[in-house]
Image (cartoon, rainbow over all chains, first blue to last red; front, top):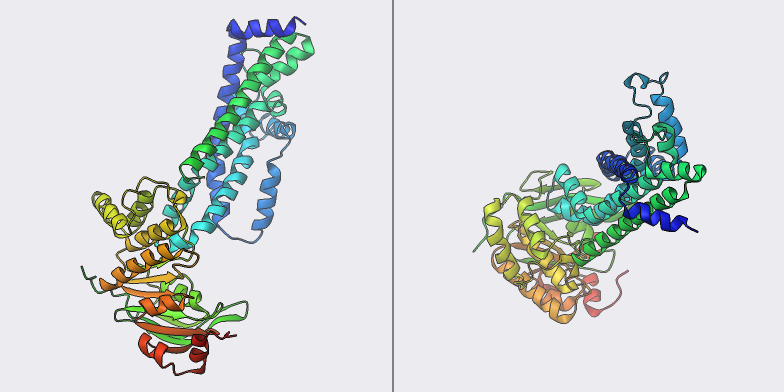
Length: 231
Length: 241
């Protein structure tokens, strides 16, 4: 029963090892969300605003990819980056960059699918007005993204929640190397198996705190949007 | 201030039909919109009023026949504006909605503030500029949409059932604004279900029935001495099927 007290002491004492892990986790997940946003928002917008044969199938596949198993993504990236893989020459396996790539692949479908839904709904609502105002295609996309900003931010936060909480992909492509590729989730898995419960519980508490904070931000974003008539 | 003449007028319909999956909403229609004043489209649901307005605005293209603006086809709506029955409010403030329309119309940034204030005042929304547009009441949203349409400085303004589902006070304020717009030389073409509104606003009437014009003419003549059976039945309150 001493573990929770020890864990709290570890968190409060500002243990440098623990905070290095937290810092790397945030760096990897935030970078992945940024990359995924740069891919997912334009891809979602393009899918929302274009019509082509097989589009419905693409939408269904994209929606299904929101539930990609992290271990499968980790395995795919591992095969790509391993020494004998097509991208092996870059030497990225077991680096934070590999973890960012894997999490980007996990998060981009979530952001793209939610952005597609947001922009498609908004486009249906605005289509006549924007046509009557003779708004060009690029200005139209910019308008839809801007007016959908609160929903899109919520999509980014959902993506961040997914990235920060997953363990399967980062442990496969990062290798859980101490001081280099060890994140909160991989450390919790390792410390638990080693029996170092205070460290695992301490990290778990911080991770839960981050997840709650992200959800609070998502909620606040939506409330702010509603208040300004923008949600 | 009278509007400058527009090269988008007259709008001419030549043998125009519009169909969706073999159902014809407009059938072999000949019509022209020119001159001045207010034309009111009357007719039962499904008569083709909204489709006619959308064709005239250029929002949809005819299935067959030709719609031209000042003798040309496919003319972008530079001096045409449309008020939809249920206008979409952009997710910004009331003033932001007008600024957007002014920018789309190509008005220089430096002139937008003054013009937005003038437009808000014109539709009785002075002091509402900072309010989120989507939180305004139905009548206020309709007036804001009207100000947004006027941001294009239109030579012709189309209104599709502009007061449907509004209370009498909101209806009156919209009608007063429409009257003011027409008095300044803007060509107004609107649809309505409300015969009283047609009497109050129309210079000319077009009675639509089954995608065709059943009767056209001056409002006074239409109401006092309709020449067709459809018009007489419509004015009597009979169901036109």
